[in-house]
Amino acid sequence: MIISREKDNEELRGIQGIIKDYLRVKRMDDFVKRILSYIIMRGSVTLYRVAVDLGMNFSTVYKKANYMVEEGLIRKARFKPTSYRYESTIKGLLSCVAYECADYNYVVSALKRKWGLPQLRDEDVAALLHVLTSFITRNNFSLELLEMPLNTVFLLYNSCGSDIYKCLLSYGVSNDVASRISNVFAYYMVRFMRNLVGEWGYFVETDKYQVLIDSKGFVIAALCTLCGSTRYCTGEFVCSKLYDNLQGIIKRVKTIRINNSKLDLKPDNEPWW
Image 1 (spheres, helix red, strand yellow):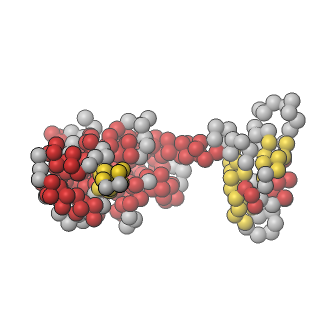
Image 2 (image 1 turned 30 degrees about the vertical axis):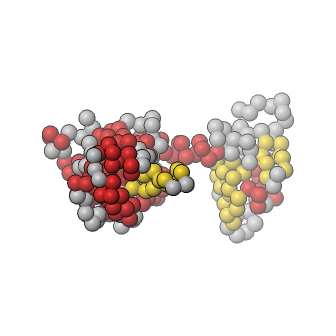
Image 3 (image 1 turned 90 degrees about the vertical axis):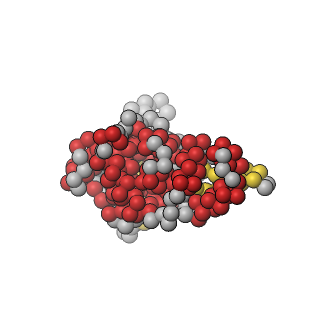
């Protein structure tokens, strides 16, 4: 178990308190809890299936579901011309943590799937939930940021800098949680850069420019002061001065492509490394 309710774990109580105070859900009666728990357990599902499996009156399910959509606990998506499926939102998952409508460990597993963290342990995701909810509420950000936690990780980086571990300790976070968050932070940043630049992409920085280059040699984006003023531009607008400067910088990428033109940096028979 990640969090033991038998031990009345302080971490779980802390998360519940933060979320309850911040979400301000109008009401979470037993019907709403049952429906929300079922949708979290089953994933995308029709209201007909909810009513049948829970043995509830369809009109009650429909009424409660409309309320839950309005509150942002679930969302609906059309899958047939006259039919919708419903799934939980991040707010719904957090509400389930706060009001204990489903097992905490299962909710954490659902968050892991929604956040695209299959390679991390549930304990790491639980630590991430704890820190992000505290960070967001302390700074009065919207909990909608948790729909895309990478954005919140970047905000955390902007606040803490590269040493996330020491920063979190200074905020009173325990050694164990801070260590787990460092792991999650590294995972997100490495995956983000890998997705952005590819397996052999590069970020090149000098005192005059910063350039992001993908694995095929295309300039994705650049910040440049070679022309006397600071310019931000995507690859198709990179200036000739930057184009020329890159020739002596890149070591592993054979070719840089700018404005659909190819720049060979080294003879083809020269190794990349």
